[in-house]
Amino acid sequence: MQQAVADSGEGRDYACPAAAPSGRVGVELLPLDQALATPGLAAEWDALAQRASEANPFAERWYLDAAIAAASGADIRLAIVRDGGLLGLMPLIWHRRYAGLPVANVQNWLNHNAFLGTPLVRDGFEQPFWSNLLSSLDASTKGAMFLHLTGINCDGPVARGLQAACSADRRQQAQVFEEERALLVHGLAPDAYLEANLRGKKRKELRRQQNRLAEIGQLDFERSDGGAGLDRWMDEFLLLERRGWKGTTGSALDCADGTRQLFRRALYGAAAEGKLELLALRLDGKAIAMLVNFITPPGAFSFKTAFDEDFARFSPGVLLQIHNLGLLERDAVKWCDSCAAQDHPMIDSIWPDRRAIGRYSVAIGGPVRRAAFSILLAAEKAKRRLRQINALKAHKANEMSS
Image (cartoon, rainbow, N blue to C red):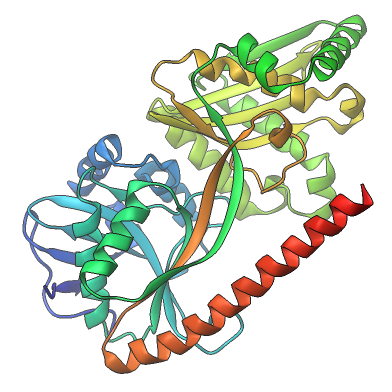
């Protein structure tokens, strides 16, 4: 069924005629900053986050409020999907190019410090969420050839709902990329988890490193919810990260006003919502490793970590992750997403489970746009197969040389 789409921007051509009022069928596309300031929507948004089929702090109101402040005026729209109630929310942005080609497309918006793009969708309503949203994008006059989704949990109900909606509408879609990152899964107590997943020799080495640190000075582990001393903690983290290799390469949060502001506002927001956890390993009161977790039951997300490279020989980051296994003692937290890159040398050795994160391309529009999309998708699939073949060759070569 074709759905109405509203756009509040003057002179814009994002949408079709009128928006559906609250509680009725329809999709609104509001500028994200305006949506964040819309009376009543904040409460709906927060309630949706509590009953969403998949937890994602990077799609919650408090995080996007921090992200939009650092977005440098980008025209980001919040898609608000309703069908007898709020079904879901997803920030969108339109692009004129794709993979270096002049191919217009619309994407779910992620800033560089957001590690999951799965939208917040009411549990059990994944397919109607996508059906309504895709129908509205079909009618858009913005000219995007397709919808490109990044950072999607490949094995979750939202991805399955997308596939079901596309199948029901005979709409072409494909997963065009996938990577795996480390995942901590609830089930064992911390000590039992370490014993099951870390070789005895490695556990012995970590105990030795911790003992050597304790010989240098007073070694303490700290865990807090940011309710007190948050400003001091953030200052310390930003300085610690900037003193390391990220500062040297200019990628530390403190190297730019935008990322520094995003970090501070996101942690303020998470603390206000009771979703922040701060961990630190201290030597004589000085932090030598620090970690930020977002706690969003039934999951958690390791947002940012930093360690003092002067103490690298003692593996302070790994020692802090051993303490982080305290997450396994929380009944409400069933898993923790590392938010780390695939094949991360540190966390992959501690957390053996994996989470598949992918990108999807989905046809939108009428026959002409969909025909053009088919050609583009065929080329992208061929490119993905070539990447897989090359990766397999590289893997075999590494096995032969080892």
